Image (tube, rainbow, N blue to C red; front, side):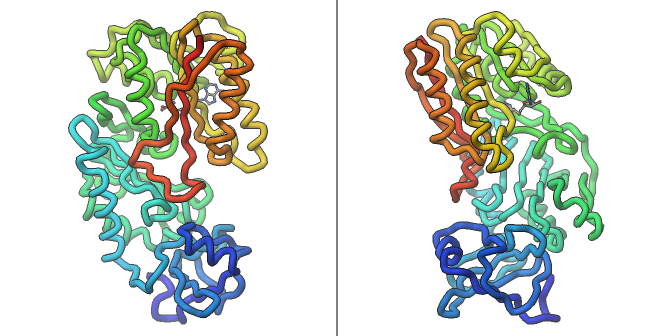
Length: 399
Ligand code: SAH
């Protein structure tokens, strides 16, 4: 590991508030929470944090350039972090999914969910025999070879793809680490199954790791509500909700997305599932906000699952208004007895704020309405701290 041997161990003292946050399980130490350190740190080395009484507090990955200065790996008693440690963590992640998320009919799942599972800044998604690892924090780069070996040993993928978040690609290139297949190359589009429905994942170039696995359970909920309904899937991406609606017996499904590529992928996904192609299908390439407000036609079930509308804290207020406006427009397109499934993946908008925006839109519609359910991510996306719980969904029935 970097920093080993040649230099003394990097030691940090934290301000009391940060110390308390770390003790209560928060996985990040921000740069302005570091009171002092024994020497400048190097990105990727292990930093040991001490409490006010100079007792071991936690150990984490240091990042000299990021405002998140340390990502906590372990808090409590001193522990040795190395290959054995990673192996044990990765095995625990796999064990939590085997027989639960990963079962007959489902070979696509998130295997490692970053901070919430002991790998802060890394996610690993499995699509059939391909493992896609996405690294979000530069601190992992010096450890990548070791981590790759651990993932290969525990997850035994036939193919492994490395993806890097944009802010670390330059640093990675300096270290000779680039995106793409590692070892044996595979196809850039991988077909996998989710609850018995086949989908393609664009593992090399698609958004995130190629598919949105976090909506798996909400899709199954939509399937259960779709019988005999005209379904509109707004921000349909590759048609996830639409295929489930078709299997649930929808009368028709309409995909609405601004991206032609996304709509084409949805069409291919239908072709991968011949038993679902009988449903009446429509595809609309348009800006969802404008189309919902201007076009005509009514539906019995509408799903709104936009991309994040608040990438920064400063965009939070605007995002709340956008959710209200979007869902108000969707409600106007619902027939009597129609159902709205509204989702938000904006980490900066809390569940309460999002629910309030949707409920305000429902109240202002002047129609009677009731909530059928609310939910978050599928269980392979555990959220161990507040910021990790980005996905929320609510389902309303309108009279
Ligand atoms: N619901 C999807 C994920 C949605 S991702 C699923 O379950 O897999 C967000 C999608 O919104 C992307 O496909 C993107 O192309 C689309 N999009 C972004 N801005 C849009 C806009 N203004 N109008 C319509 N679609 C938009």
